[in-house]
Length: 249
Length: 273
Image 1 (cartoon, each protein chain N blue to C red):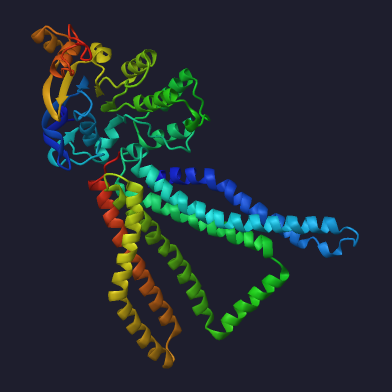
Image 2 (cartoon, each protein chain N blue to C red):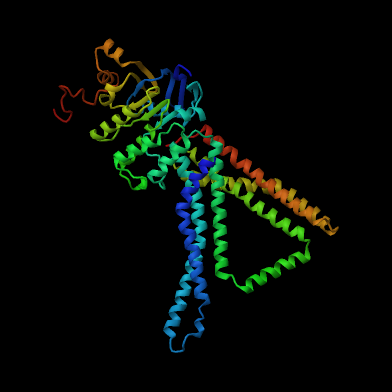
């Protein structure tokens, strides 16, 4: 078993002339909870998609568990995309069957118990579920795997604070402790307390990769404060602290 | 691949089992209205006669619509399962399964073939329910005997078996032609559905051009030599095998033309929205 779970070497991805990722060099070990932090368009989703094999790099390489993205890496990655990926025809039971058939590390009993706690029955049509229930069901199947790597793309974006607590609680109580969890988000304050490491992405490049405790010690700031400092853009008319309304005067 | 096909067919059955059942039930209803001897109705009951005639007309109309509907829905389903399942949001699940792209493509192809073949079988069964009578069986038996009489028994059976195999084999490139069109359309940044239709038309024009320029002279020459050969009282079995071989080779070439570019696009240029 490789010590380093994820190794990116000069990893680049272009869409036409636009650089989505630019020569990313990154190594992430096992048993870590990593925050992949950056504003919208910074390359977080592109990086995750490259790891999942949903995109092919235009330069450099990436390995997971010592192998390039392929059948093996897909069997050890549990991926939560930033959208619903269910088939319309499925009932909840079909989805559990599907995961059980394709993933050896899928714990059916755990998934059934989590569904029961959410009031989801096996015969419930996924199409008829509310957006929130669908999101929770998707999280349930992803976290019911004993995966080596959990790639969670914006799991808490666009949900109310109660749902946010449920999602973070589900992740923390169900992930495989020998595996690594990567959580991509720009809502730092909510996840800061659970992170071991952070990776800051800005315009496709890594601007910071460090252990959270070391970062706090070295800068004397919280990750949230540091994020605001790195990604701060002054609004038109100057900073709002003490600034004047641009329609006045 | 078996596991992928299991879910493809499970999704198909949820839609098609009720459809097939409807076709068979409509065939049964039509048979009943055919068999009820409406002309023997009492003379004074003209209104009931007209009503039954109208009912019979409606039932037949619904039957024809249902038969056509099964094939139209099957075509839309084959397209939709590829487009939604691989190139839209569902693709985020399908392409992160620990399986090879080849398995995904062949599972989709074989499932589509099973669905189309099953629809043909159901529609044939419906026609038999509607029209099966002693007269029909008698005519079919007469036709079969006529065939046996004017050609060797073995040749007819051979032609039937090879024809069946060809019909099955021809479904592969037909389905994969649709897949390639959608995959090419996926390469566009915007209006991917329209680009897929454009790719479908473009491939058709290109293939027609190639076949008229390159294949037609070859086939014409083969036909001419075949006619001369036929005049010399040839071995019918050899002719059947020759035709089968040529048509199977065309299917194989088309499959290669459609399959490998689709596989390349999905492996190297997948870019889900």
